[in-house]
Amino acid sequence: MPGILQQQSPETTLQLDVKELHPTFGAEIDNYGFLVFRNTGLNDTTHVDFSRRFGDLDAIRPYMTGGRKPRYDYYELFDAGNVDGEGAVLGHDNPRSHYGKGNAFFHVDSSFNPRRASYSLLRAAKLPPPNTGGSTEFADSRTAFDTLPEDLRHRLLEKDYVGAHSLHSSRKRGSPSFFADLHPEDFPMHRHRIVQTHEPSGRTNLYLGAHLHHIEGLSATESWQLLWSLMGWSTRPENTVSVDWRSEGDLIIWDNTAVMHRAGGGAFEGKYVRDLRRTTVHDASSTAWGLNEKKDTRPGFNSAEKPASQKLQAAVT
Image 1 (cartoon, rainbow, N blue to C red):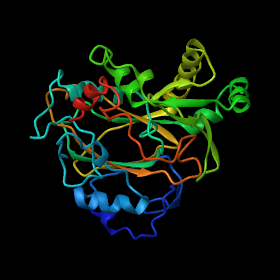
Image 2: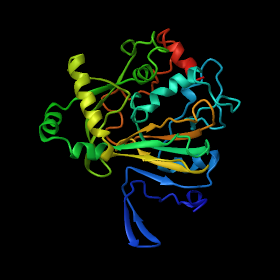
Image 3: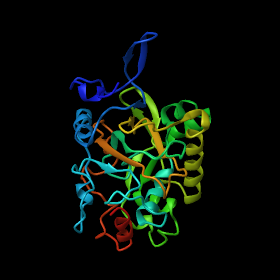
């Protein structure tokens, strides 16, 4: 229904689950991990306004250093597209293309920050031709925990492992040659427990993703073995789904504390515009800050911290 999101009231329920009330036209909504809204009619202004109803929004203002200017009129909009400041398609060798390769791994938004994200709202502003790829995939990290082998589930609950998250880690993993001089260990990381209670539903969730650099208290080998075991289990085909973008104005909303996501590739890369724009809501749960100091720092983009970070900052310019 075009424009329906612009008609929502401030009392809109945030946690969503669908209960059918009539087979052809009625449903009750509460508690789903992600939702897809087609042809919403949203633009940049209404996208941001609607997002504010979910909570306090993150913004790109801390990243606008060295004279950088945002591509949009709103600092609350994050650029998830493949276009430059003039709207042209980024080439394969563009630094921003290398930066974006890390998004092809399952991840949760903002786990590398001291305060994590709750909801993300991703909108299609312009899409590539049909059948050229560019879908967005999701993995259910709550069901992943529920279905773990009993011995592994018991181990996780007993050990209460803490994960250290780093934007540098996911970017280097996505394009190791381009970021060869970037060493994630040289930068601050932010800490969140791997096993958490998803407060809106009361279910247990695995808080993982590509930003997770290592698990504290384990050797490097043990950490990677456990991490890859958990990621492999969480992203099995029966636990994932791919969502195609059909038209400009399509919007996907997801809960980063209950699902992981990743960007799908395809023939559109380097050829056609895929302009997606995202707002990100700060988590307000009791575990929003993890085990971190409640201080709004953005180590992933501060080139003053380490010279190697300048290349990362240049990649998002």
